[in-house]
Image (cartoon, rainbow, N blue to C red):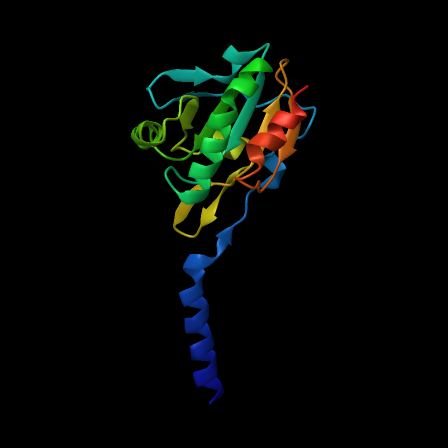
Length: 175
C-alpha cells in the first residue's frame, strides 16, 4: 500500500511540473540609483532601438509576458492612452517581451499602438533586468516596470505590476 501511495504521489508531482513557476533572478535586477543596463533591440518596425539614444529623457521600460493577451493588451492601451501625458513630461515608453518583431508588428497594428515594442527572443535584456520568468517549458517576461531618469539611472522599480494601473502609477512618479 505504501508503495502504491508513493507511486501516486510521484505521478501527481510529475503532472503538476508544467505548471510550476520559474522564479526571476532578483540578483540581476538593477536597483534604484544604479545605471540602467544598456541595450539595443529591434522594434515592431525592425528599427534597432538603443537605450542610450534616449539620454536626456525619462524612459519607461516595461516588461510584459505576451503580445495580444488580455492583461498585456490592457497595459499597452493604458500606456497608449497616456502617451501625450508622458511626452509632455519628456518621457518615452518602451515595452519589452520575448515575442518576435513580427508578433509585435501584429499587436501594434491590431491595437493601434504607436510607441516602441522591443523584441527580446534571446532573453538578454529581460535577463539583464531580472525579469525573466514563465513556467516550465514556457519562457516569458515578468510584468515589471523600470523608470530610468534622463541620466540613465534607475529612478524607480515596480514589480508584478497591475496592468490596469501601471501607466498611471509611472506617470505620477515622473516629475
